[in-house]
Image (cartoon, rainbow, N blue to C red; front, top):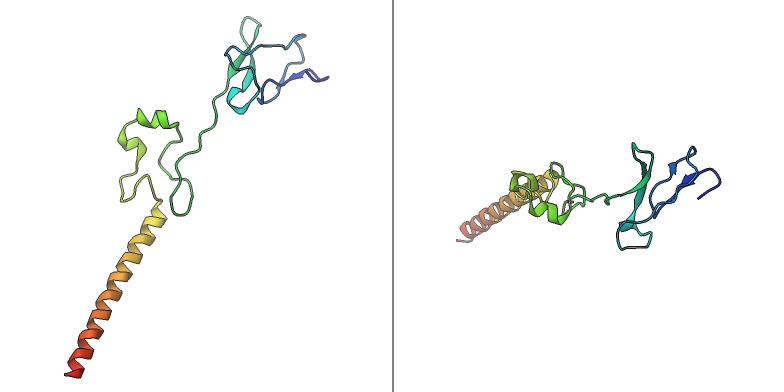
Length: 134
């Protein structure tokens, strides 16, 4: 408790409670330490009591395997929540959807096309040199 009447519980954010005299609350679960997974925010109920609401962690969504940017169109959820969602919510309907971003997929397609073109040109040059030699 600070001298301005603000309370910090766990590693939660400060809640201004200037009008109340007592801002002490207790953890409701069997985890007594103020860690990131045990954050509590103080909430005043309609009855005037102060209770602690446990805060869930912010989830980091899926990222592109090549450029590490976040993937558009896919929600940030826990791995357990992904298990319980539909496939259309976990992926994007495109080649490498849900694994690579559109920009990286485009680069891969162009690179593959150019490599194939290069192989064709090389083969044509080989045929030309064989014809010239005979």
